[in-house]
Length: 322
Image (spheres, rainbow, N blue to C red):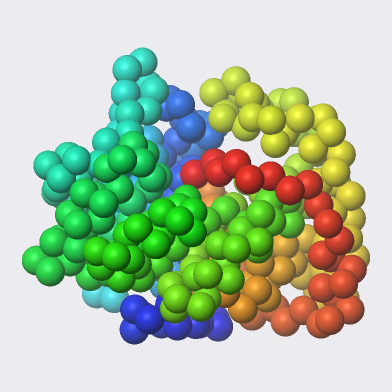
């Protein structure tokens, strides 16, 4: 599998990483539909066999369940993948979410993450969201302390703006950034990705397939059949108009994919990797068969004609989802 340097971290990683959001399962505010733990473990194992060498997760994904399943899947491996996790989003009342960035809270979160993952240190620790925004400097100072102590090897952020990045950079270098980016969500192209590239910040994009809309397998019938517990059922990005627009983009992805013997999902992910600021893409895998249908994106070269056909303006949505 093709790899790339992650900013200035010194890490070289596969261009496609395993996104473990759905591994957390249902039963929480931003959960997907029910997820079988055996399927999750099989997907992780298949991804590693095919060259994926890092996993991105967060303690809020299933309120610890995602990290626990990853820990189970990796137990006993002599050559485990790199582990990236986050802090700052906790379980609130009635399965809701609570945002906390105090020093003691972050340290407690990390301690719990390390125990669930079964490791002494994580390779990348990220602030999940800039909330509460007034606390981001305190949080960043804490992450810098954790790195100095060897509990985390690298530090980064997710869902931050340029102005917020600049505030953190006055304290300690920001090594990585994780923004949403896809043909359905291109606002990061305006200033965020150019800024990250100029500052040498490694970029891991998430939701490169629009949370399933660009896989080529989403239909109106499939969407209507999603259970009420799936967060997508109540999200504006899955309105009837957005679905129609995504189907038009998928048709272009399918045409390009036919020229490369690639799936629409692979083309959608490869499109994000064509941006020179993007080092790698986080792709959510729920079953081993999904891994096999997408990992080829890491090595898929799209021509100028391909990009021209694919990259017609899609709906521009600045909202984040992870």
